[in-house]
Length: 112
Length: 114
Image 1 (tube, chains in turn red, blue):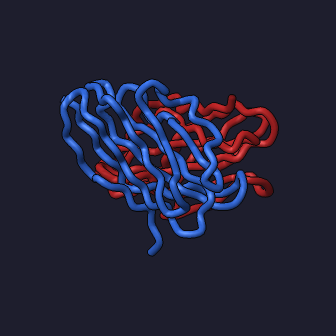
Image 2 (tube, one colour; image 1 turned 45 degrees about the vertical axis):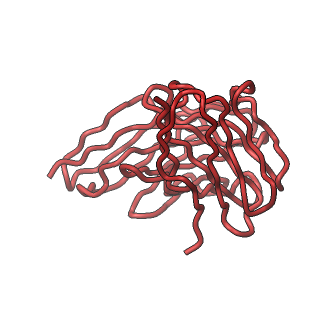
Image 3 (tube, helix red, strand yellow; image 1 turned 90 degrees about the vertical axis):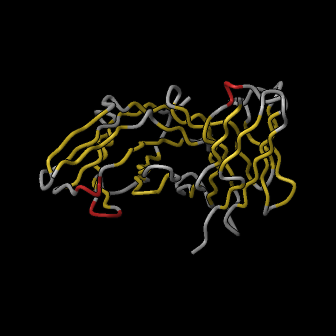
């Protein structure tokens, strides 16, 4: 079965600095990869996805993610973090089985 | 804006009681997923449907949980009898299209079983 791993429970960055939230995946066949964000007491919101094509995908709120097949990674990035980016971030993977599996989540804290 | 609607948003019940959570997927979406979120386990996939047919419910404790889609506008998740360990936030999500389609999540139903 497909799976994703988010190796960091917590990421802390200063406002204005670049941020990276890491994700690695395991899947049979072609991966369909997603990033979601969750704010307190809210549902998950879709940020971006990789299906095929360019390895660098751009999404909402200035986020982007880089797909690296050789490293089986799909790291989320943003050039300049905002305090309002502080939230819980989830990586997810889907394969031919159609179900979507999520990582454990990474809590991002951006300090002023 | 189209959105996934879940009810109730909060539910407190006593052990042994039946709990039913409802979800209205976005109109036109053909897949519906149920997830459970806890601090310890994170997001667990409980069940999902495609075109109202259950595709996989292997993540669900079969003896007490059941999931159904009586029609295209309603998905239900039922727990009978409920136990304290069922306390969690339950999310419904819907999507359309194939594997590349993202899911749209509801705001969740927070269940507390005393």
